[in-house]
Every structure is written in structure tokens, then in C-alpha cells.
Figure 1 (cartoon, rainbow, N blue to C red):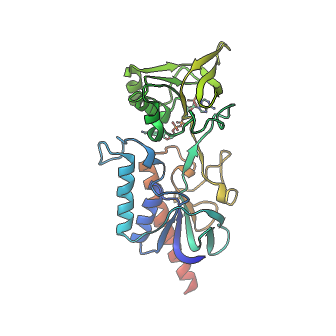
Figure 2: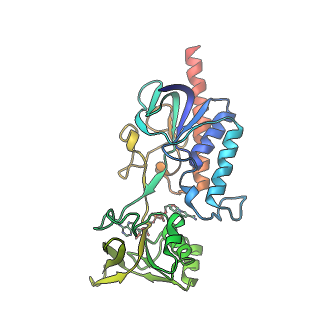
Figure 3: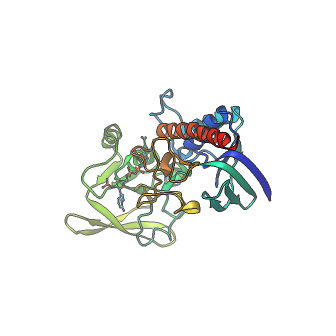
Length: 312
Ligand code: NAP
């Protein structure tokens, strides 16, 4: 077991975590990023981003490589693929224990992001990897010339449905209302995409198949009509839930689990900050995550200075 001490440990290596690391290191604070998986976070799976200022169009993976390179330049330490055993945010110093190491830190920045929400219908768990996928960029190529459905009406669902038309012969977008939530520009693209058909006012009630998915049971929420739709795959994109399992309940959270912070990104615990998708925020974008990371790191540095003053 390795033992490490840092002035700040950042849990999560997505845009918020890299930005926090960069700003902390530039504030002359020793900083480490600890992540349960590969670094890069959710944007690594995005095909393209067209709304990160300074880049008219850039691949999500490529942008996150640039974030990492930038954090490296200022000496942020990186610990990917760490299996978390426990996180104690209430002790001083705070302690993060993984299968391989123990990290002690005076401040912690929670940047663990969020993960896809499940439909919670029969067949969903059973067919994961056999027709149920939460990542179109990862799995679209398996559906060349096949029929797929995407569920949801937000930016993710609509963007991914359009993307899937490049591979599939037909893409159904199944939405529970008669109006999309996605940004207008993204909606317009969908309406112009020939192979994309929107099924309005409808929910999926069951995912069916033998070895692989072959159909969905659908219910029209207005008429109550139940129908079967033949598909080879289904991509639920119905929103996200925060990754808080390893420290759930230690900081104040809203009823969905998203962490509550003040304008400096401070949580209910002194020296603990939360940034990006894991916090309660009105906008979840790479740019807002990066901004959160900068704010949190600057205030973590200020907090560390106050600790030094108390010790002197
Ligand atoms: P979202 O905006 O929360 O949309 C979720 C969609 O799923 C909504 O249309 C919702 O319907 C529907 N839904 C929720 N629960 C459902 C259920 N049980 N059954 C059927 N439908 C259900 O989630 P998101 O699209 O994953 O986006 C998450 C965040 O990332 C957003 O802030 C989004 O703007 C951002 N994002 C941005 C971009 C971009 O700017 N390029 C790309 C991707 C994501 P209702 O509309 O009826 O509530």
C-alpha cells in the first residue's frame, strides 16, 4: 500500500477535475487527480463538440487529451484506475483509500461527474451489451444497416440519434412528450435527418429478445395504446445521476444526490469542494465544468493559506 500526502486531492479526472488540478498547481499547491477509471470523463465519449469556445469543432477525446496535457504541464499528479475503498471527508486531513494507496489531503475537490440513468424496465439489465447500450459513440458501428431506437428528448438523445443515422438503416427517437427538450439548433438537425423518425408521447415498457434485443413494447401515454416495435438495439439517453456512492451522505445533497455548493464551490464541509456534473447546477457543459474547477481550486488555495496562518 502506497501512502501519499497532497494539499489537494481531486476525485475525478474529467474537465472539472483537470481544470481544478491546473489551477491548484498554478496556485503552488500540490495536487493529485484520483479516478476510478481512465482519465477524460464523459466528454471522452462525445463524438464532437461544437460549443467549447476556441474550438469550432473538436472531438471529445481530443479535447480531453488537451486538458490532460495542460494539467501535466503544471505537474498535476495522476492516479487513474483506482478502486475506491473509502472516502473520509470529515476527518482532518481527509483520507481517500483505494485498493492500491492511501491519499491524505487538506482539501478535496469532488469532480466525480455523473452517469446515465436507467429506464428501469424489464429486459434492460438483461440485454446490456446485447442490444441495450448507453454509448452510441462506442457501439454505433455494431448497428450498421440495422434498426435502432433512442429514448429521450434532451440534447444527448437527439444528438446521438442523429449520429446513429450514419450507421443504422432507421433510427426511432422515442420521447414521452410531444416537444423535445434539446436545444433548438440540435432539434432542427434532427427534423432534417431523413432516416430519423420521432415517436411522440410514448414510453418504452419492455425490452424483448432472445439472445439479442429484437423488439420493444411501447405505450402511448395519451391514448394508452400498446404496440410492438421491431428494433435491433436501444439507446436510453434519459438523463444522468451523480457519482456519489463513495462519499454519499457526508456532504449536503439535493434529493437526486447532486451536491449543494456555494458560489465558491464549497460544500457543507470546510475544505471540501464539488465541481462539474456531480454538483447541483443549472448547466452541465464542458465549459461550466472547467469553470467550476477553476473557482474551486482558487478557493481551495485561499483556504489552505488560512490553515497556514492558523498554524503560525
Ligand atoms: P436531460 O437534458 O435531462 O434530458 C433527459 C430527457 O429524457 C428528457 O427529454 C426527459 O423527458 C427524458 N426522460 C427522463 N426520464 C425519462 C424516463 N424515465 N422515460 C423516458 N424519458 C425520460 O439529459 P441529457 O440529454 O442526458 O443531458 C444532460 C445534460 O448534459 C444537459 O444539461 C444537457 O444540456 C447537457 N448536454 C449538452 C450537450 C451539448 O450541448 N452539445 C450534449 C449532451 C448533453 P422530458 O423532456 O419530458 O423531461
